[in-house]
Length: 492
Image 1 (tube, rainbow, N blue to C red):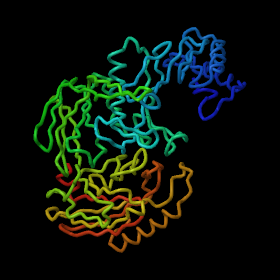
Image 2 (image 1 turned 30 degrees about the horizontal axis):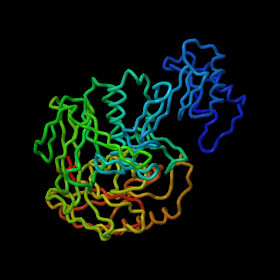
Image 3 (image 1 turned 30 degrees about the vertical axis):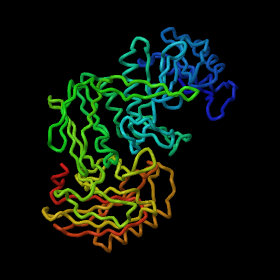
Image 4 (image 1 turned 135 degrees about the horizontal axis):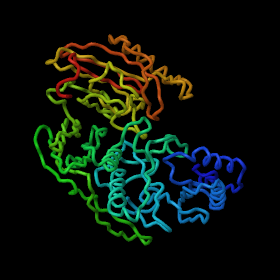
């Protein structure tokens, strides 16, 4: 159905029913009559009841006896001309208390929408119930929200929840939200799966083995070392290996969603005990300062691994490709992330948006490169010079610098940005004087608003033990380093 011919949000309370609405509704039925995946006709979404009842009657005039007519309500509403009402329920997000506040619905238990926002670059310690819609939407809270919904609705109460739809599959543009996007998707706007996407994958396809470590893109962590390591899997058990040492083996079903509480109107807190949740594995094994190699395996040939850095990162590991890394700005410390840079993965250590600078398609020249992680370099307060040395034990390396140039693909409809273009020209002069050469123009990555923007890639060869200095510019850019053999041994 159409998402409410008259939507009641944003102050739209117009109640006039137009011929266009009737025409579109009839066309919806006639054009999709034989579509095999359509179970119901919808008379509206979060709209006005008089309008819903009218369009339900229009649908019935088309005389389709094979399908029921429904309506997606946002509250305690019941459209009399519909066969049943579904409900968009966001208790634990827009309304109610924490993620456990999932009330019994009136009239019936059909859930047409539920979900929570998730910025993959915003984080809180595991088990923390903290979020601010449109300002701070941490990944960890969204994971608990999803774990609780799937366990309580889709496992513990299947009989009373005959329909349950998650909202939604992928982030999309919506002007009423920060950065103009709705962040409830299981995939980012750029198309990268969030951790919760894997939880749904193993739930809906239990016959396919899934082993997935959570928090891969939270690559530099500042919480307590024993904040936790989480994985999603439908395996019977998972073995954790940390920095090459086998640690605890955990059974599926041993994880408990953390306790929470709901406050009454008088301010009294009512505790809500956590519940067991399937397919979630959690270890309190502490990380060491600096680089950590985390691996999990089900013992049946299915495994996952990731490299995570724990603050204080301190000096580079003795085997790291980049040594003696220094930042001239104490407010913008630098850390060499000794693992391959990933397409659509964040590169900065903190951001203010639903994702970070990402590559739509990773340039083949930089595949296998590690990168120097800093705070966002387009912030003038964070401008910094970078000094480092290539490890003396390698044959040499290639240093890449990729930076925005202030122009955009035609599809974005954005005009060139003179300030960014000016900073990019300064960067070209800086790199040219330091011996760098332009490698590729027209590279597309995404800026901090996740808008597609053009960038240039420059590079310079560096010998074993050579010291490198890169003067800072106020511009979005990232420095990547790859040894002469491709991927450095400690990053594999």
